[in-house]
Image (tube, rainbow, N blue to C red):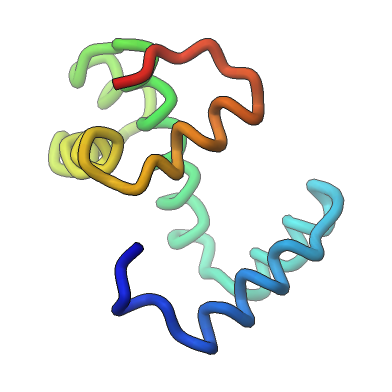
Length: 100
């Protein structure tokens, strides 16, 4: 875990997120907390990660998500050298993605 982000304020944010129970609650909260572009960027990275785990090519991912190759590369680095957060979520959601 990156010690730079481990703060009391981030703990409070995560505690708030963990109280959300439905997609509608998530929409309400995240629309208040994030700008539209921030939320779309987060969702784009998540889609990129899923597609990378499905072994899609950078070109296919870029065409389908609109993500730049720099973003795809950054997400790929997180998948390969990060904290396994994406894979934890994919497993819990039952996605049949190929792991590292």
